[in-house]
Image (cartoon, rainbow, N blue to C red; front, top):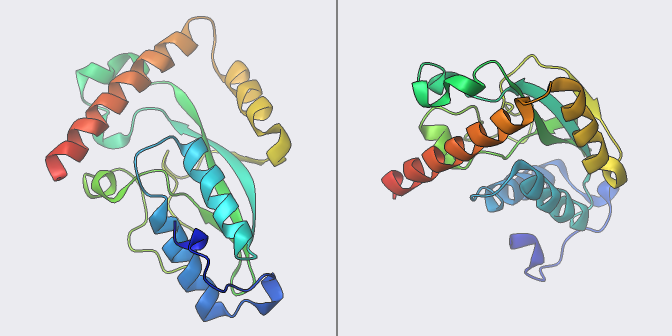
Length: 183
């Protein structure tokens, strides 16, 4: 990670110039665009941002489990009607105020058509990995997992969690094949 290189970085938000801050934020979000879960990527991004004096808060949103580009693929038919509880961040910048930041999909997947923002200007909200328009909840970092599970319990009826998990396994396999094809 670029933020862990030992370079001299401002330690407070007030000392962060807009140009430097945007550059560090966009570099940091590029650094975490590798395979992994939304939870792990955004936890890492929050940690890296904190190191350079930029605050963030977890943001939970819901949207379709199956991305629009795969809605007609019969392999994912069982999960078409399910919602996913997705994790991203609200990043509190001194130059643009709060920004929604979502680094879930790596470039290879965004290039295949999954929702994402490439390139990102560091001045505007990023696209959400589960699509736009779903509700959102800001939750304390210390209770993030608990809040996410509570939302899932509210969203899924008996048997739907298993369908979600199986659909997610299939999606992960498809995304791995897309990454391999792009290398």
